[in-house]
Length: 332
Image (cartoon, rainbow, N blue to C red; front, side, top):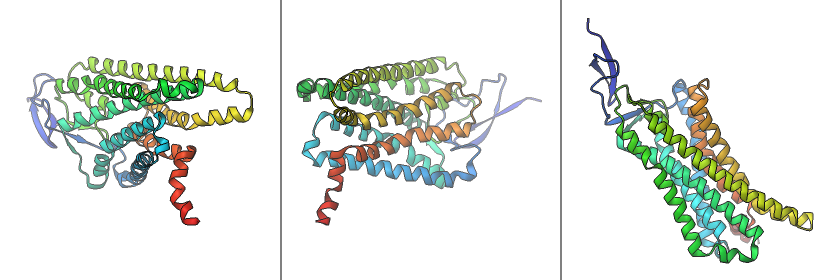
């Protein structure tokens, strides 16, 4: 009896005759099927509640930051321009992934077009790299403001700001271009079902029935380049900042100066710690349950965008005062 294998295309089960275990007619599917959180399908509705809440907070918080910076002339300085870039990046990251995830949880709408999947993959990776670059730019701003305060406006002039912003955008855009091109190049002859809530790069290319070492090695190269270089530059900046703080004459002056960096340090930790943990579990956590990895990958994309405006709103006096001004005027 001739052996049959079965594969999925456009959500339908197909019977594929095979002479070789890796050869079928299932190549480059028109759609992928996102499975959500395999093993926790019964809890999808409950999982959606905290994720939806975090998404709403992220959207409202980041739009509030953009509105306040636009309306308050005193905030038209490099630090808050970078903060606006961070807010826009967070809005794109969350909106690229969360609405589709919620449609899976609420309406069982699991299909995603192949090209749309690769586009989502590109935007997630691209804007994650941009966000890391923005943190480096913000660390540079803090270094200049604390270590070279008299030259701050000269060093970080508007033309320099424009060049830094352009470099951050171009680096994120160009480094990730190979991701979707390589993913489109591979033949997909096993299944079009992705065990995830969004088109994560490795989750997609693992479905290919080809040697995907190029994609895997390039992803490792980008991860080590971005995280390694950016964390090194941020650390170097803060070493210089701490040296400048410790030579200040009084404790109050040291605490006040360090307080200006507090918000930045908090959002850096909120971004890099989950990113590093997700990367390590993805590559080396073979014993980590799949549903835990998927949930954490979603938390990694949601928690920093939700926390960033909250942290800056609470810790930054100018933003806090501008936000509370209508309430104080009503009180008087």
